[in-house]
Structure formats: structure tokens, C-alpha cells
Amino acid sequence: MPERSKRLRILAGPNGSGKSTIVKKIRSSYYCGFFVNADEIQQTLDAKKVLNLNAEYGLEVSLELFNQYLLREGKSWLEKATKEKLPINISFSENNLLIANGLSTGIYDAAIAADFIRFQLLAKNNTFTFETVVSHPSKLIFLQQARTALLPSLIPHTYRTYLFDNSAENSAISLIAEIENGTTFIPKTEEIPWWVYEHVIDPLFTERDSK
Image (cartoon, rainbow, N blue to C red; front, side, top):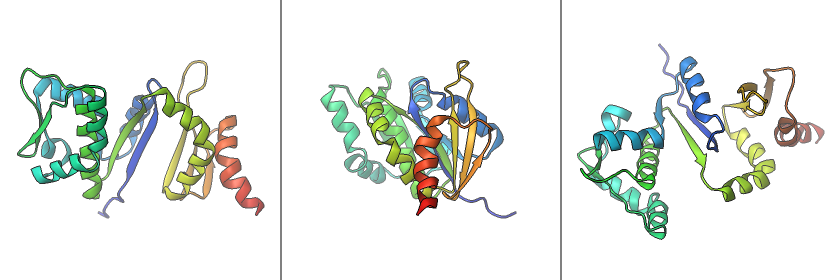
């Protein structure tokens, strides 16, 4: 059998936007590799106080790598926790992420764990999927202001982009279109929402074809 191509799938959006529902649908039909979700990690650490990286994500990681992560990529999480006066209870030992007995798993513990796992999966060139949340209103405002440039700049670098819409009154999630290799637009419905024209088709395809 030919080896599967490596894939990184990211679902981003505010809380309640349907990310988890979309993930379930995609995972039921497609190979998505490992799934990294901070909420699930937090639940596991709260219940078991230990997360074995090999059993859950096929990773073998050293304490040195974990400490390097905290000094570099994870530094911003530590700074945010310090600024908000929230404790960091997560630790690492023998390829396990740990929360000591009697301590709870905080939001930044789960965020650090998920982020560290994503970096390690990426370094190992593994296929994986993760969802990320727009956790503060300022991020949503930024995305609203930047999305005209954001989507057209990201899509050309993807192998396949899926556009979903959940703006219907019944909150149903619909696959609107696929974009292959950043250049081929494949509609999946007869009615294309206005935002797809404004933020994807016009800047990415119409402007390109008019040159």
C-alpha cells in the first residue's frame, strides 16, 4: 500500500461555532491522524493526573525537549499565566505529562500540553488535526478586520481547503466548497454565501483572472 500523504488540519473559530461537530463528521469519513484538543487533554489530566504521550500520540519525548519548549514556544503561555496570577501545575516525567495529586488542571496547563504536543507531532512529520478557539473578543475583531487578506494569503499554501457555513437559521453546518492546491474552486452547493464571494472568490480568483 502506498504511504498516506502527511496532513495537518486546523479548525479555528469562536466557542460555539461548530468546530467539534465538524471534526466529528470529518473524522468519521477521513483519516485525520492524531486529534489534539485542549479540552479533552484537560479532562484526561483532571481524571487520571497523567497523559502518556506514546499511548495517546505515538510520541517519545525527553525532559530536555519539554524544558526547551517552555523556554521558547511555551514562554508566552507562562507569561500569560503569570500576568493573570494563575498557577502552572503541569510537569513532565518519563514521557508523561503530569498533574500532581490534589491539584487541578488549569486552562494554561491544558493549553501548554496541547501546544507542546502539536509542536512534537509537527517535528515528527505526523498527520494530525487540532481545533483552536478565538478565546477573546479582541481576536474576533482582529479576524474580522484581517480576514479579507487572511484567507487569500493562506489558501494558496494548502493542499485542500474546505469552506463550511453555519449561518443558517437552524444552525446546520454545510460544506460550501473545496479548493484544491490553492487554485481550483469546487462548489459543493448551488447557493454560495456572500462571505465566500467577498473574502475568497473575489480576492483569490476574480482578481487573479483579471490580471
